[in-house]
Image: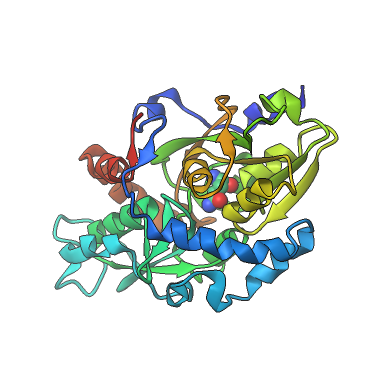
Length: 321
Ligand code: GLN
């Protein structure tokens, strides 16, 4: 079956698996960001049966989520306070000796519709990636600034210098490595399949010939395109795909496991299949060839992995089952 092929894309490492819980439910029960995003999905009903629908997401209409002021680029992650150790430093050198050529602010491109990794809450971008990036920035003596954009635009934003880093639950793939560099991985994730309760689809092998919803430009999108005879419906947000599934417009959604849990909780009559058919690693994207910044961010990231900061952040948002 063609799905086997996707495993070749993986850069999964079993050691990294130990870093994170394999599953769980979010501790942030008041995950307003997720809720906001799901309520925005009413807009997807207007035409989610068509791939053209994705273009509607370009307009950040007020209903897009109730804290859209966080969408235009200047929201700081709630974890930005973690950069407090930057105080007194014009940027570039932190108290514990980390340095970087970047001045003042470390800018991060993300797509804040991917809870628990990044989502809008109270007008700010919160989540695991926001907090990890803030901690990295803090190590480097910088303040974090988060720019929200479509997932599909993040690598271009990083390569053009619009953002220093891309942190968006982004999976390391061979294809992406052609266009962008990645830091060391900071966690692992799996791709899962969401279906309607009572669906005849019991695993990846049953997806042939089905209508599969994905988030545009994600690894789920790539894996879906490997399924024989399937029709792929691409959405700009994972929750749009999940809502389309709840509405019976599509037969399944392929998406990352933790957002899957949050989206399924916010929709009716859906379930996640047990089969975790692809294991992936998330890392931070850095402009291709910017070895210096890659090195600086890696040092900072490795330090906060080693001292347990990253595990603490992940455990705050994801509890093991
Ligand atoms: N991990 C998936 C990818 O990198 C999805 C990321 C996302 O939608 N933010 O493609």
